[in-house]
Image (cartoon, rainbow, N blue to C red; front, side, top):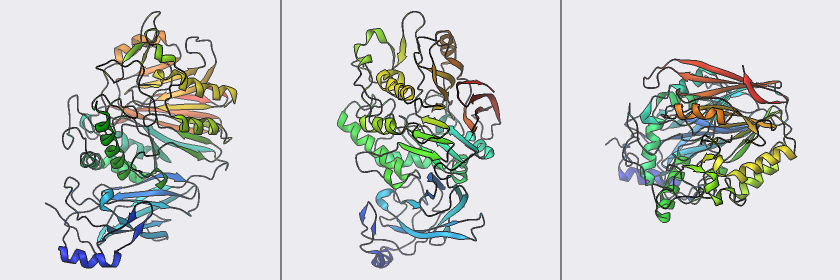
Length: 521
């Protein structure tokens, strides 16, 4: 095995200088290795920045000289130095320090860098013993309410390692966004379809299993390059844990106690591998992901978590607790006004803050499609339960806030469905003449397969508010906004099953200031 070169005696000697040291939020450190030497590069999983604000961002790495050997590092904390510079050559250092990569956190490092200048790029790297990481680039945001003329960002979802290569991340770097917004299924716990590469083992259940999966994804060079290029913001969907799970249950783990153990293991591994701010620190029972991001006076982003706090899916069958197509007339539970998608605390947070910043554009970022989508032809109304459609009272609550508060220029972004959807979000989806309250863009998958093209096309006549649908392409969405115009480009790859697939724009849509509803651009 590839292991850290140090004898047990030298480990204990090095530990003496660090005995009793404390890292905020995690308690005392029992030992720390003072001068590590590695057989292999300990920074194989790359570097990343995330959760940017006006005066800083989080920078991340994880020591992993052999990412697939849990014993490759000793069970001691290891000091890691970090530095942030104002230039790409790392000559003008503006912040630096040292933190401990702890064994109980998979030797991951999260540094919350503050006190920087707003709205500008910075560069960062890590040192551990003689090893030096690659240089990452991060950007601070404009201060809230500062006049901003333009923003370009990308959003994506559903990147299945086995079903293709992550060339979409390479194209994002070429498009040079200010940040990347990932809307869930960053990794997958399950296998299906025809693989072009393989997960590192069977479906994960334990903490070590999920760590191995995250490491396999982080080794992808295009994903590493995108993380090193700019900061990311995150929410998750289901496959970071288990398919179609809701708070305390999952169809693949029917025993609630067993699922709770599995979920908490997945949450911890997720935190260990993402550049998340300390407020999101895994507490042992939850991981707070929902947040509000202000980009000057141009845009407010409300990023929600639709998995961790929601009620179970409506009208489940005794032997099927996953999403399914449901005739709403046959489900009394469907319209229960008490059913929650976000949980009461998150609902209150969203209701109190939506549209209050005064920003020109108000963005709701979800994992799941918000638009109503009737999936039964004829007079019946059919919804897929594992979507916002399965929680109509919770969706209505958000629409009412938009109406009553007269929130303008609301854009909702989503993923999950492995298809492009571009839609008007109607006040009453059963009445095409009702007011359009929002514009929605749903991105296709980075790689994950879809088989619903013929079905979705046949349903468009039942859903005139859906202006475009395409499930045949893999890719992501690139968005550019000014005070007067929002533009979304649907970026697609010609072949996701080769490493260097070529990208192009399938279609473009615009939303004009003060005129809800996407139009061909």
